Amino acid sequence: MLKRIYDNLEKTLKQNKVLIIYGPRRVGKTTLLNNFLSQTKLNYKFDSGDSIRIQNILSSNNFSEILDYVSGYELIAIDEAQQIPNIGAGLKIIVDQCSKIFVIATGSSSFDLSQKVGEPLTGRKNTIILYPISQKELNLKYNKYELKEQLEDFLIFGSYPEILTAKTKKAKQTILNELVDSYLLKDILSLEKVKSPQVLLNLLKLLAFQIGSQVSVNELAAQLKLDIKTVDRYLDLLEKSFIILKISGFNRNLRKEIAKKSKYYFLDNGIRNAVISQFNKLENRNDVGALFENFIILERIKKQFFNNFNKFYFWRTYDQQEIDFIEERNGKLFGYEIKWGINKRIKPPKDWFKTYDNAEFKVINRNNYLDFIL
Image 1 (tube, rainbow, N blue to C red):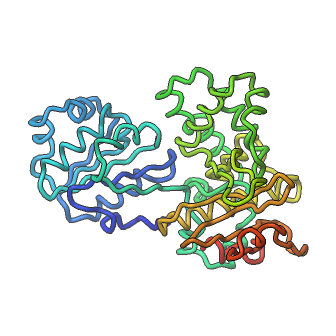
Image 2: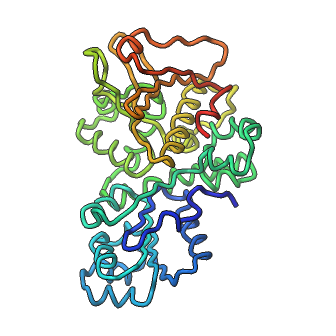
Image 3: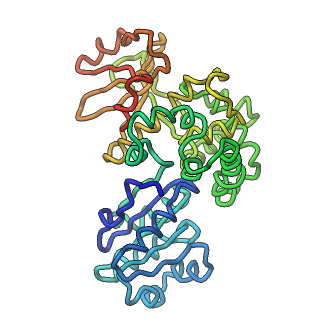
């Protein structure tokens, strides 16, 4: 069994606060919760938001019914909490009215669960995101040499738990196709009344071919024959359901810095490749640079999320100077150019140090990438 950084949930639990565990479907949220419950000494009650009975109780706003439901327990755990109407109000009653109680709620759809828990649980929750398994987590099992040996597999098939334990490439393809066809769009289609899953898949295909490039919403709308507001809404839904991630342009000093456009990356390389039905070996592909960039940026974000850091950007000017990935830490800028090739010497853009004299610049490639993401 692969060890996760959050395996010991007890470290993140606080009395009279709700621990919210977000993440895509099938990344192991329920497994993580079950593993914790099997080891905890707390007297717990575990239920699923899929249960009509639990939905009725926790959405009732009936103090006596809810308090009767949790009576005698030290820990309440609710899986798939996004299925419960007004779950935030129900959880607020529990943490406000029950002394010294712990609560955990998992959810696969950020946009829905966050709307339901956000305002009611202001100041009453902690949040973690469970991503597909990170290289930092895999390093608990494999050394750097072994991780490098598997780099091609990570770039092509990604790192969902089922993918990492599948025995054959054909099995990995089957799992990824099932994830795309049956699971990843489920929350959007059911909760947001999106009528055509094909439109969402077509949008994802367009994004899959634009990794590392600035995305024009106008162009997407024209290609999909949709209005711009609809495309913006779909992009937001895809991001909030943990399929894609938006990175904005950094802009502070220069008029010619581009800030209005964004870049979009997939949370998992395997999902990206399944969307376009492309599982060829690297030697037979023309998108290796894009795959490597997507992989590095998401692995870096996973690593930094474990460190409670989330200020990420790209940098580009109207005269085509650019840096793939920017972090702002302690008032200082760190620029990273991500390149699959290892022989070409990459110079920083001339306006980077001229504009930000305290900034740093580094090239991340196949030789040094593990130091960047572990």
